[in-house]
Amino acid sequence: MKILRSASLVEIQQHEQLCQASVLLGSHGLEAAETFKLYKAVLEPADGDKLYLLNCGFVQATHQHSGKLQDIVKERLPPQTWQRVVSCRQSPPDLALILACVDAAQGPWVLLDGNHRAIAQQLQQGTLQGVPVYLCAHPKIATWSYTPLLFQQAAKHLVLLPQVEHQPGQALQILQLCARIEPHPAQQARLLANCAAFAAWDALLLLAEAHGMAPLLQRHLAAAGINLPDQARRTLRLLCLRHRQAELVLLKTLAQILTILEQAGIPALVLKGAALCQTLYPESGLRPMRDIDLLLPAKDAFPAHALLQQHGFVDPALPIPEDHPHLASLHQTVEGLQVCLELHRDLFPHCPPYYQHFEFAELYQRAVPFVVNGVTAFTLANEDMLWHLYQHGFHAPLPYEPGKLVSVADIIGLVEANVQTLDWQKIADHYPQLLTALPLLHYLTPWNEVVQQQLRSKEQPIPTGVGQHFKGWPQKKLATQKGKNILNLLRETFWPPTWWLWLYYTPSGFFARISCRVIQHPRHVFWWVKLYWHIFLKAQLPEGEAEHGLAVLKHSRTLLRAMLSKIRTSA
Image 1 (cartoon, rainbow, N blue to C red):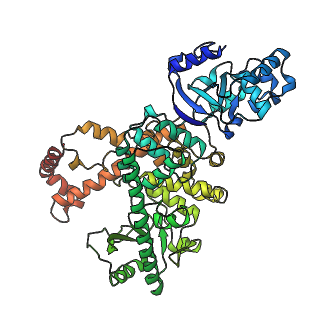
Image 2 (image 1 turned 30 degrees about the horizontal axis):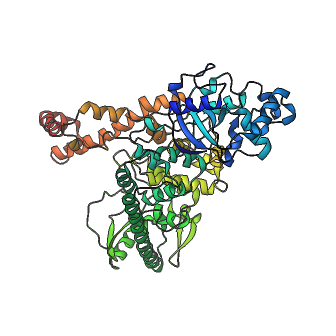
Image 3 (image 1 turned 180 degrees about the vertical axis):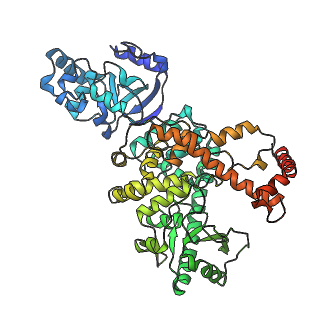
């Protein structure tokens, strides 16, 4: 379904009068006409399988009483109905049909007006491609008695994407829809609907850059045929050119680094964007990178760090905890671009939410080779890569910054490109959380139909706060909350958005969701409270006394004054 624009109720009613429609919007037990969301659209070839006739004599004339327009059997039509169908053969081809649905972009759709005309064209041409339609969307349409049973079942189990009005910003929803590599009809229809009256292009471009999404935004707007204002189009084009040039420099540097390590006998696995831009994304510059991430054997991390400093990389000498998964970042300016390199000795940090540990040898044994600037490189196997992308983007420790939409694009692109070859049994056995987390990304940008079939799961309610991340403490530091309502911070800390909660803790079932809300998440927060309390004690008490309870009691007044002072300067 190609959605062109929003439509008004007056426009629909005028069309009903023109066509002398028998079933009017809001009549025959339908919800009030004012409660429908209305659009003007054009039918596409793939829509035929989701187009249903009214259940008022037409369903009996379809194969196995499916109610689908494409299943109509001419011989089963009553004589009076057939005569009217024949008379409709001369109807203007640009005369719009009126369809009702739960979700305008995804369908299924049922014909409110134009059943005879649709049957005539289906029997005569075998398709309704290109026929204009008015879409009337309402969440309760599946309960209307005049809809076929199969339509009701399909609409009931439809996983709805949140509507524009329920999003914190239309620019964000447009960007969410573009968080994928390849477009498909349902996604493009929703993108067109969101861009129909959109004007805040400058805000959208700023948001796209913040999420590493400018090249994908350009790709999807172009694929959907959406025209930008000249200034926004030029700005977006320049951003994409810059990312393309940066990728060339980064990949050239990566090849040099891999050569240096190989000559020293140090194996490496390329992580995240530096690998995906070569193995997954179809065009240069589509996947922006902030840095180059390499995973090394733990014993080789420090020697490699020192070796690369001998080849022009600089260590800024920033303090890094001993158990941090990567060493201090290395920097080098190449062709005017600041290149940042992170050498990891572990895939994940050693703190809550507590991660599965992997030995480098086992990851390297099943690694996937690829070529970068003539140098053979290795990256994680697809199942391991998918797990790492999820953990890095959506299951990081609470103090970390929230995941960006480019992480959504990585995950969706990897799954859609490899859905037939991914070892789903291995994922179920070793990474079962993915089977709960992946369907939640559908609310940002719809999975294609093949993946939806693969991820078929039990029906669940749509979570609130789709696309919103954890914004409480310890991600927000108290020092940044000066002058702000502390109650809001407490609410954001202990009552985060449901969508994020399910994506982060992947609860399965009603009681597990309740448990993660009232037990698991608060317990997780209090782990960080305990850690920061210990850090506070060490800063306030004489060396060695922070570990002793009696010493803490002895200095309780001093600690209380220090804490109140900290709260006053932060609240």
